[in-house]
Image 1 (spheres, one colour):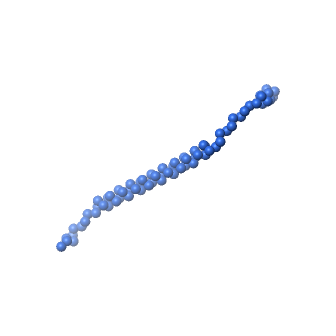
Image 2 (spheres, helix red, strand yellow):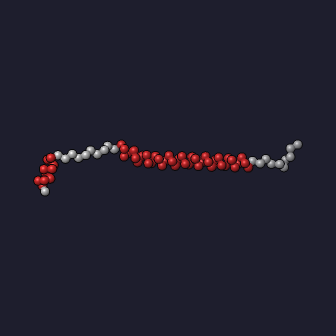
Image 3 (cartoon, one colour):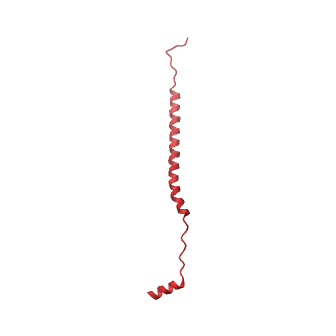
Length: 71
């Protein structure tokens, strides 16, 4: 006959479950923060690369003559 006063010790299972849950929550939070932070930085810098480079202003002799004549 089994002794009814002896209880099974499940504390190690509860500790392992708590540690595993804490690690899973921490990992999920880290990936979420990393993903949202890189998305913001990525969105800011993609517009910089997609803009066309400004064309240099070419001077002509007429403009130089005009500046000489007006000064």
